[in-house]
Length: 218
Image 1 (cartoon, rainbow, N blue to C red):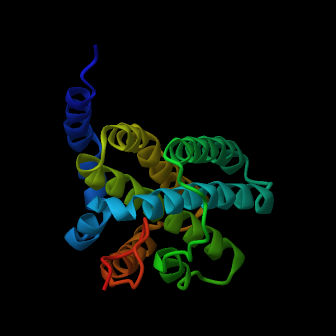
Image 2 (cartoon, rainbow, N blue to C red):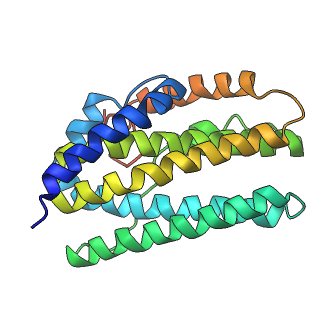
């Protein structure tokens, strides 16, 4: 019989060696320890799963919205249609876990994280597209880092599930960043640096409610 804990541990260290150094360089700070302590609490399990499901739906919506809005961009159409399908499959998997645990959907107000990033979207159409793609890259990278951070502290089923998401979340961050570079008429480095600081501030700002993308609760 397979030892899932041993497999998870092996996968954990493999992903740390292969993927996390790049993402930890891209992000300017790790997830606060205060958030991890909140995520470890059994009473927050339902909130974490419900908000995770919501995040997967929103990620699919973001990709689909870009496909509808920018029909003339062929590579964007192809990459984001695949990404949207993958996000919806992730949503279905979260929903299945919730069903097995008798966790019912309940209204959860979204974290302020994405709003803090999108507050800085530029208004001209092309610049807005580039900013949207860069912001999406940061959200995917933070999701990947957060799954990695919380995986050692949850039960076997959730740990296995979260670790299984690392590769796809990492690829999504890379796809969004590559599309931003492809469609920008100028190098995106300065804008990436700008949003890296905004993302750091967003993730370190205390929040009143625990959510998947919240900072440590105040």
